[in-house]
Image (spheres, rainbow, N blue to C red):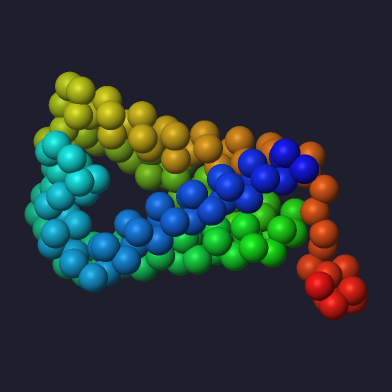
Length: 148
C-alpha cells in the first residue's frame, strides 16, 4: 500500500512537472528559452541561438511525457508504468549525457545545479521503476473484466 502510494505520487509529480514545462515551452517558446527553469540564469538560453521550432518540439515532448506519466499514475498497471518510466529514463539519460559533455555558457554553481537536476531526472524514474517491480497492481485486463 505504501509502495503504491509512493509510486502514484512520484508518477503524478513527474507528470505535472513535465506537463508544466511542456505547456510553457509550447505556449511561449521564447520565454521558456530565456527563463527556464525560472530562477537565476536561464539554463536553456546558455545554448544559443534561440530556435522556436526546437523549443516547441521540446515542449511537445515534455507535454507527451507529462500526459503518459499521469496516465500511468491513473491506470495503476505495472506494465504500463514500466513502459512509460522506461521511456522517461531513456530520454533523460540521453539528455543528461549531452549536457555532461556540452556545457554551453553554463559554469560553476549554475552548471552544477543543471547537471544535478538532470541526474535526478534519471534517478527518480529509475527509483520509481524499482518501486513498480515490487508493487501489486491491478492489470488493465482484470480491471476491464471486473468493470473497475
